[in-house]
Image (cartoon, rainbow, N blue to C red; front, side, top):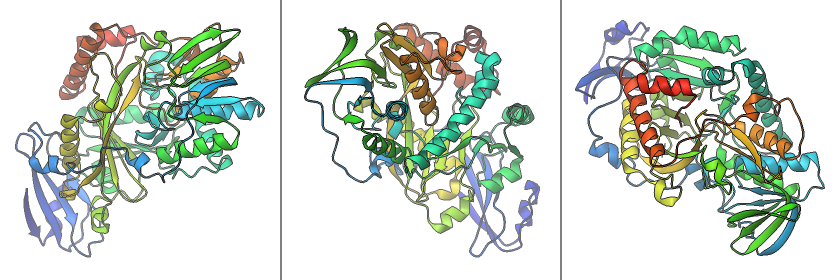
Length: 529
């Protein structure tokens, strides 16, 4: 990196922005194929706007540097969200036999919301939750904390699959979003909710070319949208990679997912739900008009069972056909200093995602850290889920490299946490439902990385299916039909790896989807995280 002080800020006038005459620091950053970015950041006492001029495609093609690897070398291999929670005594593991009206398997968002819905419907209902680890241990405590109203992984995906139901699905999604916010008040859950909207960063010319079309689609469904050209986008958040942006202010915000899971657990306990942590449900079988679940040290006899196991191995083999456990990885930085915060702007604290097939998502935390995740979606042969998969050096290195490409002014920043988590990916990118064992078992799975808000809806629908309650939602084809299943191994692994390769190729080829991706589109198959 070359650095020079330029006392005359007029050198930056080609960006189209106005600059003060005070001194600014001008940097040239060499990335990728020795292609430069030029950026300017404020010096001491500078009060103007921050701006950058993009000059090349953003992501380096060279290996991550020693400095980029060193930035996360000492990071704690644990979710920042879970690490930030105060220590507590675990809920006792199940020992012996117990009976219940409803047994929920899984103590993440879906399971905890289902428990609360069930007790609100009938306060006298005896509800027990079995959690193999601790509440919120899985995807619920490892995500980015992006709270989005969409039930269909975005409008375009929803229209491609449920065009005739999209008006209803969008309305139900926004009602669920509003209901979730109301429940945070009802149950006194402080999860650092920030209704910031969602900011999409456009990094490539072909993404910028479709900005009006994307905005028109959002507005068609009632979203309040602000389009940002390059200078306006870089004034929001100072990165030399940005060409433009779309700020969707409707039905989107940020939460602390660890605090949300902890708050849901506490609310469920107050409502009389029995929670057994460190209690893995191992088998499920019919038993005298109900269902019996066996655990390592006990058993539950329940009238009804709701499965909420996300990407973990399901008790019903049929679910495995539809879910591919895909690993996503995350870095979280140390808190930014006041000078570092000034250098990047980001005063309105939006959650950000870039628009490629391979994408990053990133956000600020309450204590001014940056969470940075995404890019690689790692599937391993057979779909294993466990602690060994939580580390992936190659992905952490790439994430660090891309972070400093996006925010070169933060060179020297360290990461304090790194982790991975399994996403319950399905081929339609949105939750699906089903029942089994003569209607006494129901499940919701396949949120595909967009479950912080949708799990509340998924829990409600699964509970309604279990109780035989017909609603506007349960009548939808969205609920009644399942996604196209993934093929068995070894075809599953081969197809997913080929699809990942072709998605990356499409990003390199101005978004053009080749024959393989077009075939998957026609078949209703997909792969995302």
